[in-house]
Length: 257
Image (tube, rainbow, N blue to C red; front, side, top):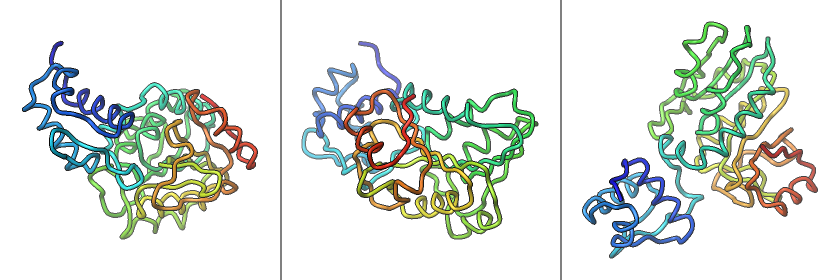
């Protein structure tokens, strides 16, 4: 097997961790077609990102509610599902609207799919990636919230991350999350990011949550909102029918991309 690029190897390692909870250096070497030295270097990088913890002979997964993946790695996971979700969201955007977009790989995918036919759109975001993606487009006014940079996600948070949002009246907020649960509601892995999401939701007339199927029936550390504070959840076809049924029974509108 030819040597895989680092980001592809990292994606496969994370997927194997998600399935088995543990990976073995020798097995990874054979599966990925690289040396054990390269595998150990990959595991060290992922450990520094708090995705796994190295143990003798391999590594074990960190608890998913306790970490965030770097945005470049997260974007490579479930890419097709996230693109499908983003496409549904993009189709909801109308000319003349002011929309709020937070951070994350699905939100970044949405930024890339905003229709060119729109001639007058304002986007308020705390994501540097979204701002950079949209800034070359003359038909879109991009407003960045300001705040303190979180390098892992290229996002802006407090201190000073929410001041602008108190002065915004938006039509729609497109928000991402790390967990969706019928009891605990929408949750996230970081308190600062959760605060920004809450402020964006409060500033919008309509709230659309974007979450791939892996987020369903999962609870992360920081509470964002209850189910009844969100107008619509867009997830993908991989979602468990039982999980979707539970959410709909709880009163949440769910669309499958």
